[in-house]
Image (cartoon, rainbow, N blue to C red):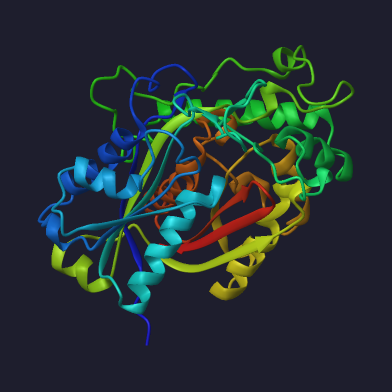
Length: 393
């Protein structure tokens, strides 16, 4: 018989813009900060009781090398007895870490795990491959590890290795999503995120990083408008509709959740934010990666034994407005008004490895604040995948 897995708490950093508010902070320090914060604000928690720290990280080529989860646990001051593992499912890495932690708790392998994700896209290094032979006499290439395909296997079909934004253009064409629709979706994201901050809705989940001046998500533009966005040029195709304004930006940040069993919650006297009720994963063609969440979410809902109409809130990570609108087109039973009511990643930001844990933690806080109910967190993933998790509060 399986145990229940519960989100006991969730915390994240403010999300920094590329090269801005958090750019001076190493990714392992960002991760250590959210781990430390979770421990410090959980009354009565002996850190030695935490059995594992699982973190998602989409890069791993720079200061986040050599298992950033273990580094974060050590830097946060956890006992050396607390283990750590790092997972990479690209944009879904943070959600994958939480999924793995929930399975470990449900099977009884662990009673208490910290799961999360981290990414510093600002500090992602350039990589120089070793030459195939000694003493090369030609030029060598530096590859940026910030985002997207690099050092591609020549056996990979070219149609799959297009830019992420070009993939969004394919979805805009396939689902007949106009530029106006994408820009309106982006504006709504900024306005909702700004309103959420003003209403104090993020206060319980955001912990500023010591040594920085950033206290709120840095990319939110409350004064954004469709008129302003209409002036931006297409970023990926001359006749396209995907722009910098209706796409998620490059970001830095970290997020983490404390996931434990019912017995641990009782011992700590903690009221869980939510129960992790079901999970789903799916694969799609890499050139249309943005619809990866569609079947992942359908699977998670089916396993939870509920339908779209049962949901009180949905957190859908927005890589591109076109991508999210394509997903919504495939979910006709979902009320779009309950999706990203506190804004999405176009405004809040998308630090790759952290985003999945961010949306799950934010969803848990939202469900608690609103008196309970069912919620869904879903995310698209580079190279054609999707993940989804259903929460019950």
